[in-house]
Image (cartoon, rainbow, N blue to C red):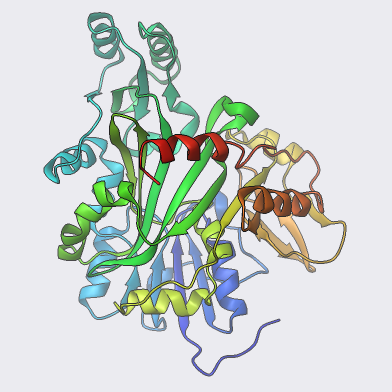
Length: 431
């Protein structure tokens, strides 16, 4: 039910893929005036029926009280708009480069006196194969630039000699040729993978910070291809040794560049130290939606305070939040024929009334029905909260059992790693 607020503001969301629909819809329901633009052609239908859509966002700059850019690549225009006096949440050219140029990101970590895992960038598959043959080890193959959006191309090796990485590089050479672009070989380090995330108000980090554990593989027990994300567990904390050793060291630099938004650094940690892997200098998906489940204040007000450079503490729930995607074919691949055959316009059905904790992703609304659109097959994100990880999981899976999506699939173990991961983190003094 939309309740008009006396302090109603005009929000313009500039979205790359339509991933922020749930947040936009929430801000609309809080009583604000909202318009949404989606850049990606195949994703244009996302949000129809939920929120007001525009085809040229630039025409609405003067209309907007606040502009939100939800992806990297908009840093230059976001900075120009801020300089012109607009309230803007979004990156800068500097923070775009942290994420999009892996070499730059690694160099900046070193510049800020943060230990990094050895890595080397290549433009030729042959050179990379020779390198592995010369320096046999376990390697991770990481695409750079635009190709890194195709998460299934990220390969994490397990062979001590790097033979599996060589096989993958040969396969990429056959299928991609010269279109693959630059890529990195990074030594694989064993440990717990954890992300440290925080909101930044242009001057400093806003507390509490967010500790996130991502589940990237398609199947339970970390089997199958990398998908970018199948689900995440998280909690909020006022301090963290991992945050102090990584993101906090960037506070002055981010302030110098007038960054306003969300930034995340993904790390592998073990008994020997903390090793940052990469930056995400924008909202994370599904991270922002699971964070929303743990934030007690209205999202519109929260975004406004952030854009206005206010100093405040985020009012968050204690305990844990978890979220799992329900996806449909051809996810995690792009295959228009399969999508059209199995998934396009499929209805999201609720057994019982109540959509609490079910966040629309690549959907449109027709006659009050939620229909799947876009082209990648991410239908909904379902969240749960609780004082313990088990409580949060139970709530989430109960909510999932209320959702029927034809051909839908999801992971049944989101949050299960917490027991083992937390034991390790405690023993290393990192929690």
